[in-house]
Length: 166
Image 1 (cartoon, one colour):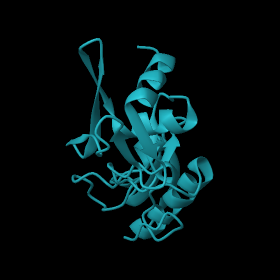
Image 2: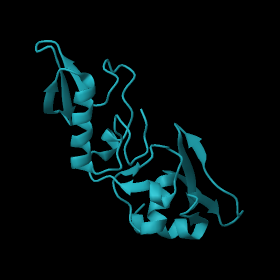
Image 3: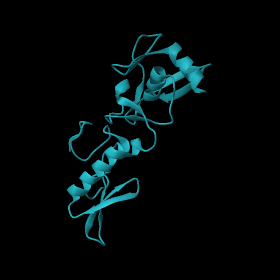
Protein backbone atom coordinates (compact mmCIF):
# COMPACT_ATOMS: atom_id res chain seq x y z
CA UNK A 1 0.00 0.00 0.00
CA UNK A 2 1.43 3.40 -0.96
CA UNK A 3 1.93 6.15 1.63
CA UNK A 4 -0.70 8.26 -0.14
CA UNK A 5 -3.25 5.44 0.05
CA UNK A 6 -2.33 4.73 3.67
CA UNK A 7 -2.78 8.41 4.59
CA UNK A 8 -6.19 8.44 2.93
CA UNK A 9 -7.28 5.32 4.84
CA UNK A 10 -5.95 6.69 8.14
CA UNK A 11 -7.73 10.00 7.70
CA UNK A 12 -10.99 8.14 7.06
CA UNK A 13 -10.63 5.67 9.94
CA UNK A 14 -8.79 7.63 12.66
CA UNK A 15 -8.33 10.92 14.46
CA UNK A 16 -4.93 11.81 15.90
CA UNK A 17 -4.36 14.20 18.80
CA UNK A 18 -0.75 15.43 18.51
CA UNK A 19 -0.72 16.81 22.08
CA UNK A 20 -1.68 13.55 23.77
CA UNK A 21 -0.44 11.15 21.08
CA UNK A 22 -3.73 9.23 21.17
CA UNK A 23 -5.21 7.80 17.99
CA UNK A 24 -8.96 7.17 18.11
CA UNK A 25 -11.21 5.31 15.71
CA UNK A 26 -13.77 7.56 14.06
CA UNK A 27 -16.35 4.74 14.14
CA UNK A 28 -16.23 4.25 17.92
CA UNK A 29 -14.57 7.39 19.27
CA UNK A 30 -12.34 5.16 21.40
CA UNK A 31 -8.56 5.03 21.55
CA UNK A 32 -7.20 2.30 19.34
CA UNK A 33 -4.13 0.10 19.37
CA UNK A 34 -2.60 -2.71 21.36
CA UNK A 35 0.88 -3.16 22.79
CA UNK A 36 3.44 -5.37 21.11
CA UNK A 37 7.04 -5.34 22.38
CA UNK A 38 6.33 -2.02 24.12
CA UNK A 39 5.08 -0.28 20.97
CA UNK A 40 1.45 0.40 20.15
CA UNK A 41 0.20 -1.36 17.04
CA UNK A 42 -2.88 -0.49 15.01
CA UNK A 43 -4.80 -2.67 12.59
CA UNK A 44 -6.11 -0.97 9.46
CA UNK A 45 -8.68 -2.75 7.34
CA UNK A 46 -8.95 -2.35 3.59
CA UNK A 47 -11.29 -4.49 1.50
CA UNK A 48 -11.56 -6.99 4.35
CA UNK A 49 -7.80 -7.36 4.60
CA UNK A 50 -5.94 -6.43 7.79
CA UNK A 51 -2.75 -4.37 7.67
CA UNK A 52 -0.71 -3.90 10.86
CA UNK A 53 1.17 -0.68 11.53
CA UNK A 54 3.05 0.78 14.45
CA UNK A 55 1.01 3.63 15.95
CA UNK A 56 3.92 6.08 15.93
CA UNK A 57 4.22 5.65 12.16
CA UNK A 58 0.50 6.37 11.73
CA UNK A 59 0.77 9.40 14.04
CA UNK A 60 3.74 10.78 12.12
CA UNK A 61 2.03 10.19 8.78
CA UNK A 62 -1.22 11.84 9.86
CA UNK A 63 0.59 14.89 11.25
CA UNK A 64 3.30 15.50 8.64
CA UNK A 65 1.63 13.82 5.61
CA UNK A 66 4.81 11.86 4.92
CA UNK A 67 6.29 8.63 6.20
CA UNK A 68 10.06 8.36 6.67
CA UNK A 69 11.93 5.07 6.69
CA UNK A 70 12.54 5.28 10.44
CA UNK A 71 11.05 7.25 13.34
CA UNK A 72 12.67 7.75 16.73
CA UNK A 73 11.00 8.30 20.11
CA UNK A 74 13.01 11.17 21.61
CA UNK A 75 12.34 10.18 25.24
CA UNK A 76 12.75 6.44 24.46
CA UNK A 77 9.24 5.64 25.76
CA UNK A 78 7.92 3.33 23.05
CA UNK A 79 4.22 4.09 23.48
CA UNK A 80 4.55 7.89 23.83
CA UNK A 81 3.28 8.99 20.43
CA UNK A 82 2.97 12.72 21.06
CA UNK A 83 4.26 14.56 18.01
CA UNK A 84 6.91 16.41 20.07
CA UNK A 85 8.33 13.00 20.97
CA UNK A 86 8.56 11.70 17.40
CA UNK A 87 11.33 12.60 14.97
CA UNK A 88 12.52 11.32 11.66
CA UNK A 89 15.59 9.13 12.01
CA UNK A 90 17.99 10.41 9.40
CA UNK A 91 20.46 7.62 10.00
CA UNK A 92 21.66 6.21 13.25
CA UNK A 93 19.70 8.16 15.86
CA UNK A 94 17.71 5.05 16.79
CA UNK A 95 20.93 3.11 17.38
CA UNK A 96 22.39 5.81 19.62
CA UNK A 97 19.19 6.70 21.48
CA UNK A 98 19.00 3.64 23.73
CA UNK A 99 20.38 2.49 27.05
CA UNK A 100 23.51 0.34 27.38
CA UNK A 101 23.07 -3.35 26.67
CA UNK A 102 22.86 -5.71 29.65
CA UNK A 103 26.20 -7.30 28.79
CA UNK A 104 28.00 -3.94 28.77
CA UNK A 105 31.04 -4.38 31.04
CA UNK A 106 31.72 -0.67 31.68
CA UNK A 107 28.13 0.41 32.36
CA UNK A 108 28.38 3.28 29.88
CA UNK A 109 27.26 3.63 26.26
CA UNK A 110 30.11 3.86 23.80
CA UNK A 111 32.82 2.89 26.28
CA UNK A 112 34.92 -0.26 26.08
CA UNK A 113 38.09 -1.37 27.83
CA UNK A 114 41.13 -1.96 25.63
CA UNK A 115 43.09 -4.74 27.39
CA UNK A 116 46.21 -4.26 25.26
CA UNK A 117 46.55 -0.58 26.18
CA UNK A 118 44.98 -0.83 29.62
CA UNK A 119 42.76 2.18 28.80
CA UNK A 120 39.08 2.91 28.29
CA UNK A 121 38.12 3.72 24.72
CA UNK A 122 35.24 5.93 23.58
CA UNK A 123 33.70 4.62 20.32
CA UNK A 124 30.80 6.02 18.29
CA UNK A 125 29.40 4.13 15.29
CA UNK A 126 32.47 1.84 15.22
CA UNK A 127 34.78 4.88 15.06
CA UNK A 128 37.41 5.48 17.70
CA UNK A 129 37.00 8.80 19.53
CA UNK A 130 39.66 8.76 22.26
CA UNK A 131 41.43 6.77 24.99
CA UNK A 132 41.13 7.57 28.71
CA UNK A 133 42.48 6.20 31.97
CA UNK A 134 39.02 6.56 33.53
CA UNK A 135 35.76 5.13 32.16
CA UNK A 136 33.86 8.26 33.27
CA UNK A 137 36.10 10.49 31.13
CA UNK A 138 35.59 8.11 28.18
CA UNK A 139 31.81 8.29 28.73
CA UNK A 140 31.93 12.09 28.74
CA UNK A 141 33.94 12.03 25.49
CA UNK A 142 31.28 9.76 23.95
CA UNK A 143 28.51 12.10 25.16
CA UNK A 144 30.22 15.07 23.49
CA UNK A 145 30.64 13.13 20.23
CA UNK A 146 26.96 12.06 20.26
CA UNK A 147 25.78 15.63 20.81
CA UNK A 148 28.06 16.91 18.01
CA UNK A 149 26.83 14.27 15.55
CA UNK A 150 23.13 13.84 16.44
CA UNK A 151 22.14 16.91 18.45
CA UNK A 152 21.02 17.41 22.04
CA UNK A 153 18.00 15.07 22.15
CA UNK A 154 19.81 11.76 22.28
CA UNK A 155 20.72 9.33 25.04
CA UNK A 156 23.73 10.36 27.07
CA UNK A 157 25.56 8.72 29.90
CA UNK A 158 25.15 11.77 32.12
CA UNK A 159 22.56 14.50 32.78
CA UNK A 160 21.68 16.62 29.77
CA UNK A 161 18.88 18.47 28.04
CA UNK A 162 17.31 15.14 27.06
CA UNK A 163 16.42 14.82 30.76
CA UNK A 164 18.07 11.46 31.14
CA UNK A 165 19.76 10.87 34.45
CA UNK A 166 22.25 8.13 35.14
